[in-house]
Amino acid sequence: MRTRYRRMLRAFGPLRWGAVVFLLVVIIASALAPLLAQDPLAQDYVNAGLPVGSPSHLLGTDGFGRDTLSRLLYGAGVELIIASGATAVAVTFGTTLGLLGGYFGGVVETLTMRLVIDVLLALPPVVLALLIVTIYGPGVVTLIVTMGVLFSPVFARTAYGQTLSVRRTEYVEAARAFGAGAPRILFGTVLPNISAPLVVQASVVIAASILLESGLSYLGLGVVPPAPSLGSMVADGQRFMATQPQLILIPSLFIVLVTLSFSLLGDTLRDWLDPRGKAARDV
Image (cartoon, rainbow, N blue to C red; front, top):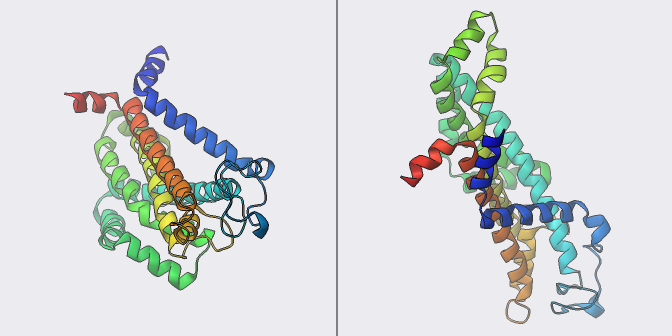
């Protein structure tokens, strides 16, 4: 336990601790947005275009008089829900295919890793996302399912490679000798021993999901207006770039900070959970 604790302290540097604290603040603030923020849809044309630092609107208001801070908190909550949901779908779908293909091989490997994963990898993800959202219409559920399928190859290939390396190990052979069935071996023995790289990938995929959803919302194919989202805030602020640059700078900077923080979290988890990999990189 002490060794694991010391390893965690070595993995977390000042910048990475700052990223973790920032993410915690964002998650808590977005979860408590109904208590902390104003109505993000309330329009007040009398107070439209207020600058940053206004008494009742700390980050100002947009062209419709809507509070920027409130829209930022609600938009962050929507982004985190979509990114987390998409990552959960990708982890479940991709890891299952990777486990099956790596453990059984043969026909199962061809069906899972070749006919499904390789086909998904051959398709441009952004173009495919645009196509699916255009056909089925924008919305939270559509975005979660679409991005979950698009990011599933990352977990499938990771799980596949890790399963190949552990399927002949002693503990797997022991479980098989004691009569454990394939589902129990896969999800009770193999999966816990290959979970570390999957956890690292999950944090990176959350960051990529936020970027992709923000891009789709910027194009009007993400969260349905007037619901706030970070991408739509950037699109709305673009119209006032010359007179009110804060309307585009604030959500853009926020997106950068959130995605960078998740990326730093992924690096931290990698160094913490895989110290041998860190030692190899430092050589």
